[in-house]
Amino acid sequence: MKKSPVILLQLSNFASALGNSIVMITIPWLILERTDSPAFAGLVAAVSALPAILVSPIGGWMVDHLGRRAVSIGADLLSSLSVAAFPIVAAIFGLSNTSILLIAVVGAVFDPAGYTARKTLLSDVAKKSGIELDRLNGIHEGFMGVSWIFGPAIGAGLISTVGSINSFWAAAILFVIAALAIAFLRVGDLGQESKDAATESGEQVDLRLRAGIKTLWNDKLLRTLSIALLILAAVYLPTEAIVLPTFFESANNPSGLGLVISTLAAGSAIGSFGYGWISKQIQRKTLMRCIMLGSALSIIPMAFLPPLPLLMAAGFFLGLSWGPYSPLVNSLVQQRIPAHLQGRVFGIQTAVFYVAPPLGMVLAGLSVERYGVSVTYAFLAAVLSITSVLVLLTKSLRSNF
Image (cartoon, rainbow, N blue to C red; front, top):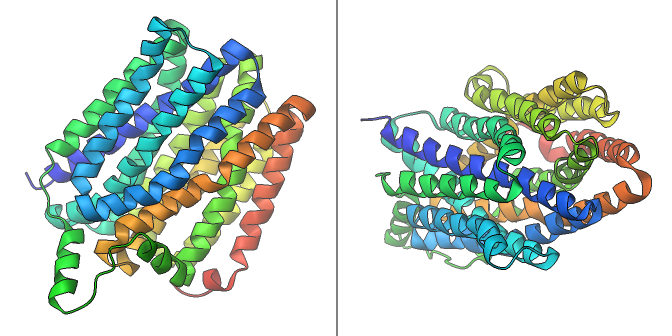
């Protein structure tokens, strides 16, 4: 079946992202339930993000050297074991603040490699299935968005029914499903083909990790977009990991948190799925303007923490504005970077995504405890809006790309 590679890759993508979305809502809820400390929740979120800064580039290097499928399968199986450690440790030893922190950190080590491997597999699947790469990038990021529609709601439902500890079993099973889907995937490896072609032509192939860093830095457009992602992630991620969970936990309303994050994901999924069509209608620089301005304008009303329906509506438009960003960047990497370097470049971009958020999460947690949710959210929204506008003024984003 010609489309089976697309189905298998997206099954893996969806299952892994669904597992992560459940874990993302369950861990802070578990911490707030046991400690009632937004600062500690912020600390755990920040410290558990630190391994990805180091591991993501290594994971990208492994993708380019060990193969895309092998890294994807191994990462998801190890993620399953790390998630299952929460209920296992709770049953045998009991969970303490230290054990929660350690398990969260260990679990964060494996996911970036799987995420990177699946991104590099997109080119292989597009070639095997005969699907346009822009369209497949949109589908891939769209299914990830769909997982965040259902994941938080499922996580909230599990917390309400079986409790936060037992909720982790669902995520562990989903990671196993993700690994099995890639195990059945049969496609070529454009990374290896590119490496072989370069060697045969007499080109010296640089196998070192720093080759990916150099390649990304020398591409001015990708460098600008990566720096923009670093700043925006540092400002935005604390709102989902700290600010909103604290707001809804204080109201004893886990379903409200799930609904807001789900509507955010719904907008993001629609924006991502539409990327393949949008990319044919307007120039990429115009699309980037829409992404940045739409995100800035959408988060402002959210910062006022209006009634739930209005908060959900603003979240939807924020997700809709941001949705095309990831498939656009995926397409740029795939078109501008040699296939045998894509794992390292994607890995570095993933690391960039994790660099600044830890500090943002710690500061957000401290700010929430001292100044409250409303003040903290307003400040973060202001910084995100200003940054989005400033990004549009950079020279590389004003040129055609």
